[in-house]
Every structure is written in structure tokens, then in C-alpha cells.
Picture 1 (cartoon, rainbow, N blue to C red):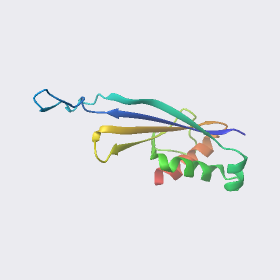
Picture 2 (cartoon, rainbow, N blue to C red; picture 1 turned 90 degrees about the vertical axis):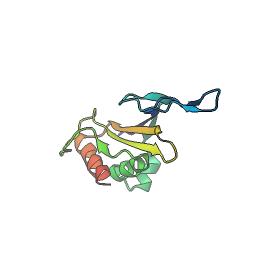
Picture 3 (cartoon, one colour; picture 1 turned 180 degrees about the vertical axis):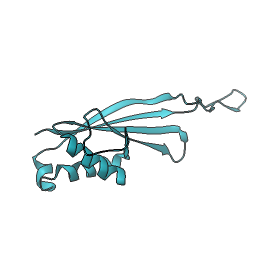
Picture 4 (tube, one colour; picture 1 turned 45 degrees about the vertical axis):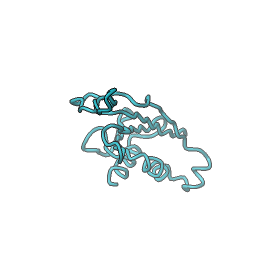
Length: 132
């Protein structure tokens, strides 16, 4: 069976670009009223469950997924409440504001469970990850 986790990261800013005028004064950095600008293009990583993962996690694909998703910070399900079954089009999301630049640099992450995950397995992962 092929269990895949797709992790997509997009780095954005919710403020206009900051610059310095020829006189040395700061300009820009205004809030964009819910709009954003891309700082780094979206990138998607696919992590596949393999034989080594099966041995490491004693065949527990749910535990492997929770451990793989945890560091991404994606813990908000795309819908609520999460029941006993989650469709393949559902995702988890999260965001990380740079501690030094705040909403001038935000990493937004989304995670999807694709391929052979059953709706019940997805639900188990969503429940475990969203409990934190």
C-alpha cells in the first residue's frame, strides 16, 4: 500500500515591501487589508511510507503520520467537526509567523494524506494532530 503525505509550504507577507528613501527614511510596510504578496514560491514535498518506516513504527501508519506532520505545525483541519471519516480532498493547515519579522514573513503550511489512506485512517490522523 502507498501512503503519502503531501506537505506544501508558501512564504508570504501581509505587508507592502519596505524600503528606504534616498533621504534615509523608512517607507512601506503597510498592512495589505487581507491581501498578501509571495516571498517564496510554494513548494510541495511528498513523504512516502516505506519498509523502513513500517519497521520503525511497527506497522503503525497512523503514528508515523502524526510524527511526520507534527513538526510542520499543520494542525487545523479544513472542516469541523472532524468525524469518523475524512475525505481525500481534506487538509490540515498551520502558519508560522517569523519571530523577528512578524506578518512581514509568514510560512503557511498545508498537509494532505493521499494515495491509499482510508477515510477512517485520515480521521484518526486528523484527530491526533489537531489535539496537539
